[in-house]
Structures are given as C-alpha cells and as structure tokens.
Image 1 (cartoon, helix red, strand yellow):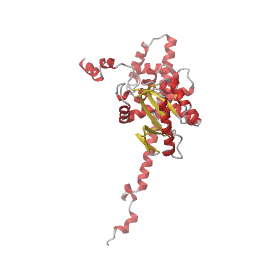
Image 2 (cartoon, one colour; image 1 turned 60 degrees about the vertical axis):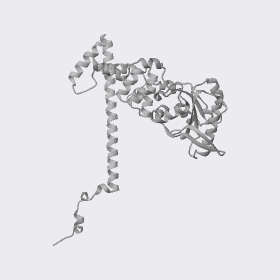
Image 3 (cartoon, one colour; image 1 turned 60 degrees about the horizontal axis):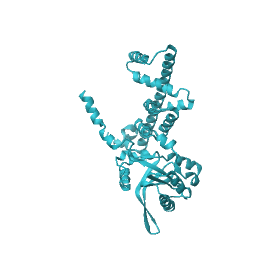
Image 4 (cartoon, helix red, strand yellow; image 1 turned 90 degrees about the vertical axis):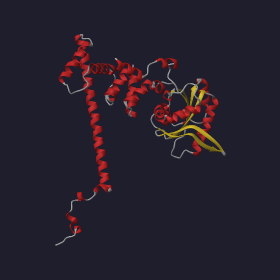
Length: 357
C-alpha cells in the first residue's frame, strides 16, 4: 500500500527539517554564542585575577624573606631555576618575570585596597608596562583606571605612556571656558577630555607644514588621530559646510562626542593663537547649534589647535566668548631633532646587525 510522505509528516523528527533557515534557530545560535563568549570573558577575568593574586603572594614572600635573611637579588635567579624545574609546563617563573613580580609588589605596597583591586583588573603585561615606565603610584593608578575605562591593549597603553598622556590630560593647566557655558557634569567631562598639547607625531610632517596639509594627513591617519583625541569621538567630516545668510563657511574638522552628546568643532592653526580665532569659532558653534544640532544634543563645543599660544592672550580671548571652547597646542614631531634622528639606526639596521652576529 502506497503512503504519501506527507501522510507520515507527523512522524518525522524536527531535525529532519531545514531549521538553519528559520529565524528562531538563528536567534537560538546567536544567544548560545553570546553565552559562550560571556563565559569565556568571565573565565579569562577570573584566571587573570587568580594569577595576579598568586603574583602578589610571590612578590610578598620573596621580599619578606630577602629582608629577613639579608639575601640579595641573586637569589631570584636560583628561585627561578627551582620553580621552573618543579613546574616545567608553567610560564611566568623566569628570572626577569620574578624580578618584575617583586618590583610590582613593592611598587603598590602600602597603597589603598581600592588601588590594589583596580590593579588586579588589568592583565599582567599591562601591569609590567606601567611599572617599568611610570615612576610614582599615583600616575600609575591613573593609567590603570584609564586602561579599564577604555579597554586599551598593551600597545595602546604603551603609546599613551610614551606620549605622556597623564601630564597632558590630567596634569595640564588647560585653557577653556567650559564651566561658564556647560552644566557641571558636562563641563567636568569636557575638561577631562581636553589635552594640552596634542601629539601628532604619527603624521611625519615637518614644523612648516601648512594647515590644509595637516588636516589632510589627520584624516588619512584618522585611527591614530581619534586615538589621540580620546575615547568617544566619532568623525563627521573635514571642511564641514555651513550656510549662514546665503554665505558658505567651512569647519576644519567636525566630530560628535558620544559621551558628551554634542558636536565638537576643531579649528587648526599653523601658528600662534590669535584672539580673532575665538570669535570665528564662536560663530561656527552658533551655526552648529542653530542649523545642525538636534533638540536631544547638548551645546556644541569648540577646540582651537595651534602651534603655540600665549596663555594670557588665550585666557582673555575666551573670557567673554559666549560658546564653550578650549585652546590647546599640538606637536607634529617629538622633541628629538631631525638631524639626530637621521643618525640613529632604524629597526631594520638593528635587526640586520643582530643577524650578522
């Protein structure tokens, strides 16, 4: 007796159908993937925390025993040999790493519990990078907090330390009028966002580069530029067009800040700050607020970047300006002179020298 397949349909296993094409199945897989990734992240955080607790204990034991027994740092080499023999499949017991562990323990010894807890939230490699390049715990803790807030990789963290981000952002005496034109919460965040100076050494431009050339290069290197600006900036455009009173005006660079919820207009000046720059930017900010900003956006903010500035002139220029703005310097090259740079060996030269030995 012939029976049509459709008559047996209620006997078929659901898996015999093409479930992968259904929306419900794809959503289930997406949910499962999200749970697995969340578990992996949680496990990684837990492993890192346990590792750093172990390292803290090792640093304490080594330091205390050295003090009690009068041993020098030569004992660390012997400890490294013995621990590596006992745990051949575990990394982290080299002489250099044990020395880093000891230095890390001593660096944060005596700091508050909140500092020690924060330090335990970043990977060991980040911790080593900080204690090797930063001299005092207060500055180090600032870099720890910023690493947690921004999710910096070790390479990015290294760049921020090398370009002295703490000194430029947290320690700089900034020229701005945010507190007079913004609510307290927004003015504090805007002030924290501002740096002085901004370092554009990734552009590889000489000191005599023109404004449009700098602007073009910044856009070409927009990833590095936005890293230097800081977290939260979204690029809108360069030479952003505004039309006011049937005339055309152009903002050098326009961004939107996701935390401040406002537009940020940047004007580049290849020379010293002039008072008239503030008036021009004030006009641009007025135009942005009237023609571009939505009702949900906060007031637009301006930033004048110039090669150098007279602090008194800049502060006076901003004192009676009606819109929130700041003035900061930028640097195209690091302090090392070009003639000295040309005499230094390149990475390729160093690698070639090593391979020849």
